Image (cartoon, rainbow, N blue to C red; front, top):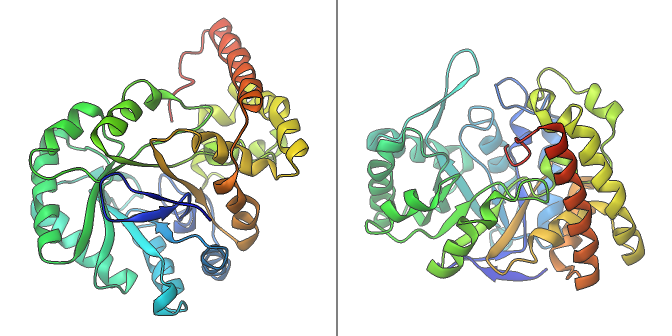
Length: 334
């Protein structure tokens, strides 16, 4: 699998990364429903076997549950094959399963120590501020992270879900290695400002939800959307209910012939599409079981033709026009 350097950092990442948001389970506000732990571990191991060299997780995913499963998987992998690990700080779980932001220095340090224990590693390869919440504390959190880097507990520091102005505030303290934003055919907001900025400043981009939480895999249906568990946050996402759901599935059917003509899985197509941008280092794909990474890993090596990109752009243009006609201006939000 191809590798790309993460901005100006020392890290080289495969163009596909293993995402572990969903394996945190369903007992919190942004859960994905119940998860079989052994399937999750086997999915991670299969990804590494297929050549993926990095895993993305976060302390908030299931209040540490995701990091613990990643740690169990890492213990089954020989040290010479160990993938790089990225995790995040700044989100804490309330008793009712909802989430709050905290970016005070001592909290960041405590979160880092807890993540190291759960993951079973001595150093986190990429540590990221999960959300700029509260905004006024991002500099304090960033300073704490740079100090953790100086002690050897972190290799590189990055941010997730930050805007250009926020990254500019952090750059004088320490260079931002990477940005992790949502990016997919159905959510293109970062093309306006963040992608050009990252390209100019040498900030790596590792995008999450490139398959729009499963909508663009080709396996999603109206029936499946209606059957989503209350524990699955997608049941409350406008993209998974009409009228947006119908228009999103129309896009999938319009572009499906591209994958079929190339002899590829439909799930690879949205990954190849986000990776067409030179600013994007890697696309994170959710892995809940081995079959998912088997269907997506090949997307990291697929270079789309101008003709194929044109077909996709036309399908997205039609979707935008229909959304405008419906008066729905939320199509770019997650």
